[in-house]
Structure formats: structure tokens, C-alpha cells
Image 1 (cartoon, rainbow, N blue to C red):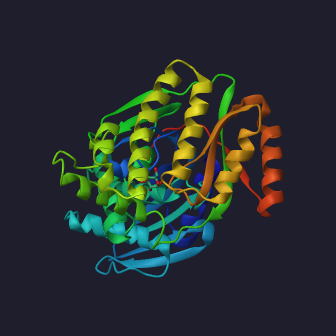
Image 2: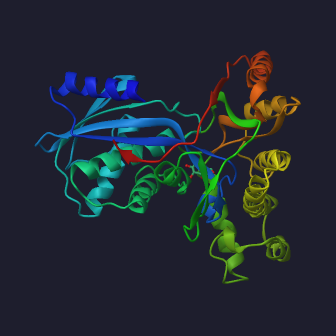
Image 3: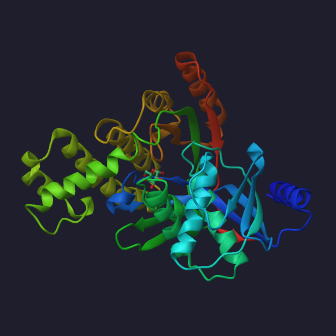
Amino acid sequence: MKDIQSKVIKAFADRYSAEPSVIAKAPGRINLIGEHTDYNLGLVLPAAIDRYMLFALRANHTDTCRIHALDINESVEIKLDNLEKGDQLWANYLRGVLLQFKERDISLDGFDCVFSSTIPIGSGLSSSAALDCGFIKGVSALHQSSLSNWDIVTISNQSNNNYLNVQSGILDQFSSVFGKKDQCMMMDCKTRDYQYHSLDLGAYCLVLINTNVKHENVTSGYNDRPSECKEVVRLLRVYDESVESLRDIDLVLLDKYKDHLSQTLYNRTRFIIEENERVRSFVSAMEDKDYIRMGTLLLESHKGLQELYEVSCSELDLLVELAMKEANVLGSRMMGGGFGGCTLNLMRRDEVDEVVRRVSNAYKESTGINSVMYQVNLEDGLSIL
Ligand code: GLA
């Protein structure tokens, strides 16, 4: 932590010949279970992790934001009166949130900024939510504006939905903002109520294994799922007006109206109903320290994501299959939006190196791709240092 902080401060001083006046830190996240449920107003169980983005900022008394992405050595100058999209995706995330400030009539002055990250990009650990939330927190602190944590979540979510046209929910931002050391959080995306739960895994631990592939692109993949779910709501509301989201559909209702849905839409809905149920079961298994049950639920979640929700891919399925061949692995599943990224594995702590070595070797042999393993700890959320 100190390393990256001094690196960012030094880079800031080198570039702008001044000390930053604000430093904001935003972590990445894992999600134990409850995948694709967020935009369906269901249940999620995420946690913030000890991988994060750090932003150093200082007012420059102009109308321009000069921003430098240290890790990739790229810079942009954004004029506050021109927030049109540019070529670099990372800078468009920042433009999107600046536009949200504008739409809320929060007036901003120009500033200089350097940021750096320890979150692997594109691996499903929500580096983009950390990018948004850390930047929003830093800019807001610099202007002494009093945005609440939920404002920060909403600004990022609306920027994603409206500016970047990514129809994601609030899982990632919520996790990065509200995370707490050694705790995971069960959140109800309909009411936004949440509770912290200690994560005591006994002799077990969580290990992420990155497939190192990403099949999705901006126009296909993730966004299809929110559209399909909206279509289910539109079709079923004709018969039952109380249906406002997939959260309002249970298996009885689904069964009653199943003839009005295609097989695909039926499968999507069934997955969401069952996944919400799995979140509740996982929390009780966690309270009972029933690690075997937790592992089983992870695997069931993966099967649902693979077969019913269809957001997995062959590399994720292979990593799960290889992990489940190991006696010391209790459960494994794809994590996050899907189409690549990481699997989340529950395995014996003292066997991690051996298990990961065997799984990675077999993965490499069959795909030719090197996977990467991360062990993460649960950490506090968004803060000003
Ligand atoms: C991505 C999205 C989240 C959520 C997950 C799947 O991380 O950004 O909003 O939908 O996928 O659970």
C-alpha cells in the first residue's frame, strides 16, 4: 500500500511540480454468490478486497482536467465544457462521471490527477468500478462537495448505463464503496438494505484463478442479459401487474406462465430465482460454518450461470472442472459478469500451492493459456487517505 502511494505521489510531483492535496483509494471486489442478480433487484454477497486504485489530485485553477494513468503511461486533457467521448476507454469512464457531476449542478474547476492500480484489469475484479468510485470520491473531496456513499454508487451506475451504455447494476460500486475489513455484505438490490457478515473460513480460503480471456465486447454479451430480463418482465406483466422486475417472480408464478416465455427466457428467469435463493442459503451455511454446503452452492451457481444464464465460456468451465477434480477444493464458480475473467474457488488453505499448480498446468496444456492466481483478503471500502 505504502509503495503504490509513494509511487503515485512521486509521479504527481514529477508531472505537475506540486504535492497532491487529495488522495483517494477505491478497492476492487469479489462476489461470493449472487451473480447477475443486481440489475434484477435481487440479492448479492460481495466484499471489497486488498487490491485497489489510488488517485492523487490537486486543483489547477484552469477549465481543464489533466489526468495521467500511471500504469499504462497514458494521459488525457479533458475540458470541463466538452465531455464528448474520446478514444481511450478509461478516460471515457472519467468523462462519464464528470458529466454526472454536471447533471447534478455540482460545479467543478480544473484539476491535475495521477492514478495507479493494483487491481488486474479485465479480470472481473471490478477495476472499472474502482476507477469510477475513486475518481468521484477524489473529485468530490477536492471540491468539498458532500456526496454520500450512495450518491457515489448512483453516479457511477448512471454513468455506466447512460454514457457508456453498459447496462450493469450496482454490485461493483456498492462493494467498492461499502466494503469492510474481513466482512462480506449481503445486499438486497431492491431495498438497498445490507448487512455485514464475518467471513471465517476455518482451514479453507478463497482463491481466484484468472482464465486470462475476455470474449465479450461492448455490443454483445453482458448487455443482452438485462434486455432479456426486461423482456420477461414485459411479457409477464400482461398477466400479473405486480411483476416489476425478476425479483417479483417466484417458481410458482414462473411455472404458471411458462408457456408465454421462450425456453431461453424461462431459463434466464429460473436461474435468477434460484440464485437469489442460493444467496440466502450461502449466508446460513456461512453462519453454520458449513464449508461443504458453501462449496456445493458455489458449484450450483456455476452450473446455472453456464447452462441457464449462459454467461460462462469454455475456459471458465474448464477451470471449474479442473478445480472440482481436486479433493481439497469444495467449490468453484465463474465470478462477475462472465465470458472470461476469474473463477472463485473455496479450497484448503494448506493445499493452495499444490492445487493451483496442478489446475494451472492442466489448463495450460489444454488451452495453451497461462492462468494467474490471486489470493485476496477482505478490506475496507472507499476512503480519502
Ligand atoms: C458485472 C456488472 C455487475 C453485475 C455482475 C454480475 O460485474 O458490472 O453489475 O451484474 O457483472 O453479477
